[in-house]
Image (cartoon, rainbow, N blue to C red; front, side, top):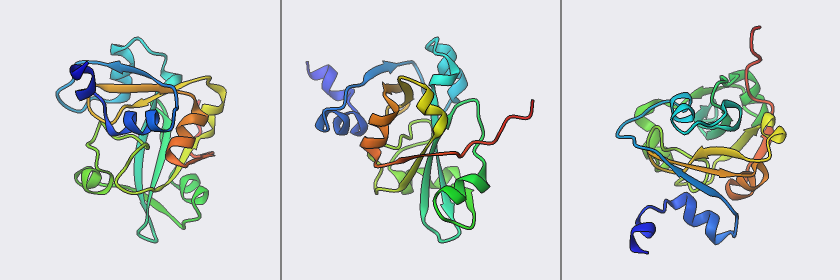
Length: 164
């Protein structure tokens, strides 16, 4: 029982406190790998796996965006969705000080502060989505609505349209 306890992340503790059901997946990982590689390692469909991106707006406030791993954040749409003139990606070196998480282990649930969060509207099409569990080697699966409940977020149209 104690071994199971030590693998819990802050995000998992929050989900349990809120009585939000989730599934937990683990994988071997010593350093950052991108979401596509994680999906491949766990044999997960790309459209179900989402990455968490942190930006800073022209107001100097921070904003969190959760988007499909194979997509790119549209900075104009993202800014508009949170009422900013513009947003820029947070520098990797600042992720831990702003969120409390490290690159590759960042999730919208349980950051140091409650930031305005947008989950791409494509998540509405999924029964469940998979996001970082709050540390390297950890992924959690939950319904998009439950993710939004846990991080006090909203849906938004924030990804760049693919150029096909």
